[in-house]
Length: 241
Ligand code: PGA
Image 1 (cartoon, rainbow, N blue to C red):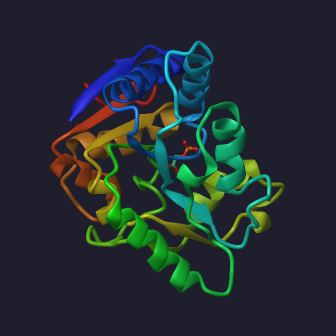
Image 2 (image 1 turned 120 degrees about the vertical axis):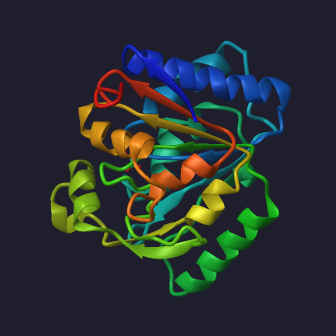
Image 3 (image 1 turned 135 degrees about the vertical axis):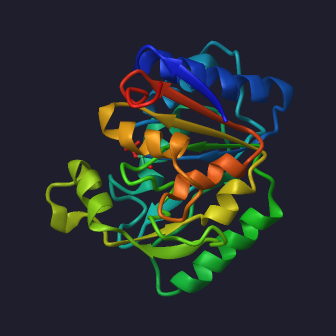
């Protein structure tokens, strides 16, 4: 794993954007795996800036998102569909048919899961952007998830619901289930870019870097991947030497 330690969140976002821009310069029709949450917001802002300055275009880019809450309609302000459109897609030249976000609502969730998995397997993700949970999760693959897991419906841990409560009025509004790419789908990407910011992530980063490859820490599987770049700010890196 290549580890980059940035001074602060701004620099982390800039370094991450340079990696994405470098890929798009070589491959304008790249397929990106995208993440939600607080961490990639700065990266997406930088990508919008570079698009507006005509440094990059997303016209031929395809995207696949990691996950989506169940129980929330797409238009709910906290759905990841809304997040992606507000934070990135509405501000760039990507075409709607090139955007893939799992659907977490409907009578046929098992079928939706299978369909998303089939789409993923037919695609090759050139670069997968990841955050990391305080508990070491990637996507919504919570501790204990098999490394062989493909797209599935997951029951979120109390810890993850608590961490995501800040986006909702109360804990009761935080969905209990989500649809997520499995670990097997994630590590099929050609390149992985994991971002972590803030002191709350320091223990998970310490475990990722010094711990054993272990299903209790889903992110630990990344040590087996040949092309992973981890971009941290100083706080997230505060427990590593
Ligand atoms: P965050 O979430 O970026 O909001 O901290 C990361 C994650 O849970 O994977």
